Image: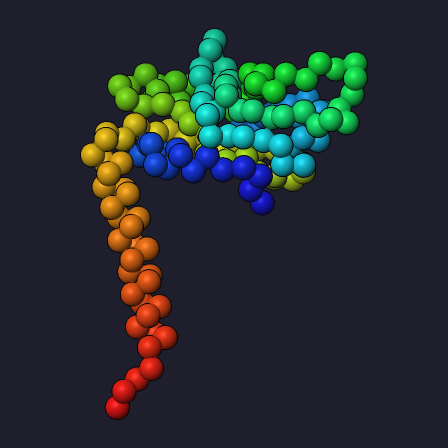
Length: 154
């Protein structure tokens, strides 16, 4: 079950590989995620000292959050992956044009996981091509609906 999706990632990047990572969260963040107070569109992943960190994931605190905790919505979250996977990602990210972007958050076994993609940025003409293809698919769907719903004249 998907919690939040980063639809802009598919528009702005060519997705080459996907990885699943755990995420370190505080208790108030889990409560907020369960109530849907999350925004993933501006998120990105950085590698620092051989560890992965998710920056730009916004989790808005609930009004009923604890008073002794000062919730920070834009806190940097640590991602959990095997060391060998991280080393492999470091090698790929060092190649020109590659980056790591979060695709979605989902539950797996009662825990929140993040799908991280190794991606390459799209050029402006590629984005226009994506829009053109999407519009054509939509138009094809409309034409097929009209063709199916039109009565036959024999």
